[in-house]
Length: 196
Image (tube, rainbow, N blue to C red):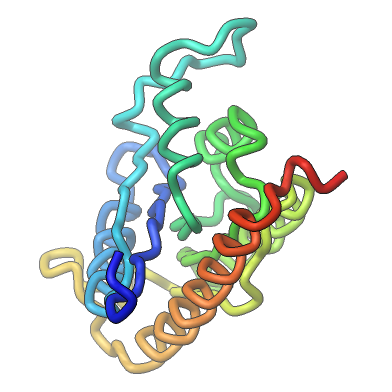
């Protein structure tokens, strides 16, 4: 990589929902467009619907799980797009997260949430605890889309009043990139698994 051209951040954009008729497709597509427009990111879109993961944790890792592990290992950071289901996050996202361990470590994770009045913030609060347990670095800022049905045009996939969400997304992406660069360098100098 040339000294003048910064190495791109490999960002895994993770879908949090597998529900039929989900809005996750629209919200995640908006988040992906935002990251691409911001620049400096190489996106790997990880959709649990397309992974072919097993329906339960198995003794041996199958090909789909090994592929997921490799894709997460290759990532420098994560952007999780999740709805809020019953004051938390969906089971499919929990299964995906719990199917991997070491690949999350010493990498930043940021969140885009959506839902009703709370905009998915309660899902993010639960996810912060889970990712802290996995030794990932949660980005304090987040993008929250309250009453997503009203704020997002399903036909175009665009926000009806984009200014606040776009401002939040710029902040999230800036901090995510900062942490991803810092932690990538730190992992190269001293692999996290060798620290303790």
